[in-house]
Image (cartoon, rainbow, N blue to C red; front, side, top):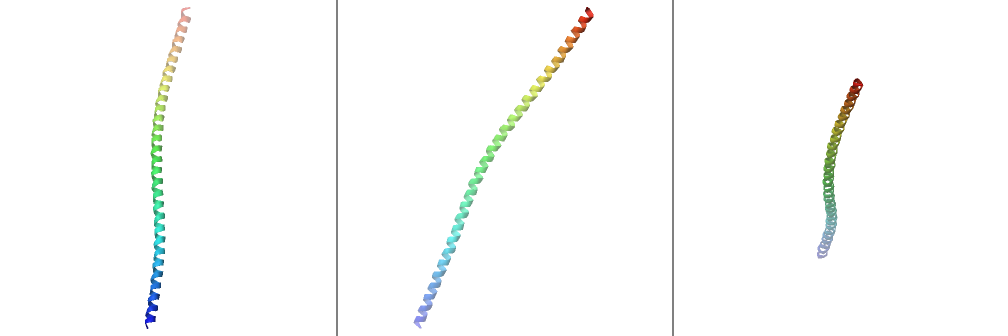
Length: 108
């Protein structure tokens, strides 16, 4: 009888040890998964920060490009106005030349 009890105790001890090993394997697997998720999250955060920095840099570059485009348009308008003024001046000169020529023809 005592041997049966001892045998059952040994079997239960073995079951408990097996449960401990299985539990430890499960815990190790879960810890590995958790570690991998933490690494992935940290990588994602690093990538997010880098992308945010890149976006900020691109926004700055876009702002500079827009300012340069606006300045170029302003300069173009100024050149167009100057060209129009010179064209009008040229027309006046031609009109004056024609007037002088026509007066000279009449006077001669």
